[in-house]
Image 1 (cartoon, rainbow, N blue to C red):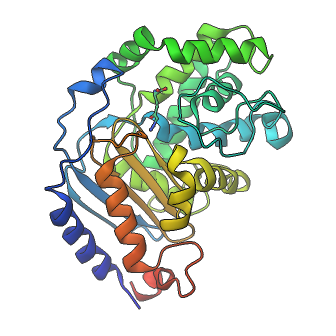
Image 2: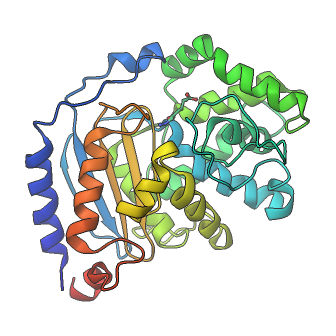
Image 3: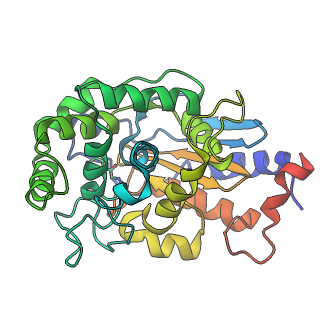
Amino acid sequence: MYDISELKRCISDLYEKHRGNNAGEVARYIPELGKADPDLFGISVVTVDGQEFSVGDHQHEFTIQSIIKPIAFLLALELHGREKTLEHVGIEPSGDAFNSVELHPQTRLPYNPMVNAGAIAVASLIKGASPDEGIQLLLQRLAIAAGRELRIDEKVRDSESLTGSRNRAIAYLLRNFDVIDDRIDHTLHQYFSQCSVLVNCRDLAMIAATMANVGENPASGKEAFALTFVRDAMAAMFTCGMYDYSGEWAYRVGIPAKSGVAGGIMAVINRQLGISVYSPRLDARGNSVRGIAVCTALAEEFGLHAFEFMNPGSNFLRDA
Ligand code: DON
């Protein structure tokens, strides 16, 4: 049996324990990301009844990067439904790096919405008629989920756009197989912009808690995402959210999660809790080193693994 005060104690302890962990490297392939202070470290949690707790640099803003992918997938499903969306992107782990220039050999579709190819296909589905439409839609939903207005870091977006040849190659591959329409620059503008939304650690925990609360922000009670499709996004996170570490993550940690190359990780404990860790040093697969360590330890301590036989974490809210 655990209560929220035990969770707070555990998070403070984990923060102190992992502060000295300097393993990993800040992402530099997007030049603007290379300027991040590698020592920044924050942890936030929000429960589905709106209690929250944060430690460290939880107010520091960074770009959401790939953590936007499950949210963008959710919006594509809302706009187009399952059948049409899944005509453009699969739902199978690839086992390959997030930026692989590849399609599934049989379906000729991107493997899943969590790798860049799938996320670019999804960006095409939500981009709208003008360069701003799809971005505004995403920002409106994120504002409800995070509980505050969010904005795009144009420097990071332009930096990625200037150096994003690999993502351009993926977009042209998608166009070749008719996965996306011929408005390739518009699709890439949507993709680069949505990766560059500025969030802090607490925002991400609130967005995660909104997902855990099946689409409704636990603090405001406002609906950010359609209840029907939250499960689709969580399933994609569970099976594919940590890239070529996804299988091991599902086995060891057992929580739907998504990482981003700026150093964020967002994890969702269904119907209970949103967790976020920010620390810019990444491992070779592009996942935050401290983020993985903190989530792994939290899952272990509170039995948060989806298939934990006791799952004592389910008592957070009862005991609060
Ligand atoms: O497309 C890219 O390379 C980045 N904008 C996003 C990649 C990312 O966050 C992968 N995460 N670990």
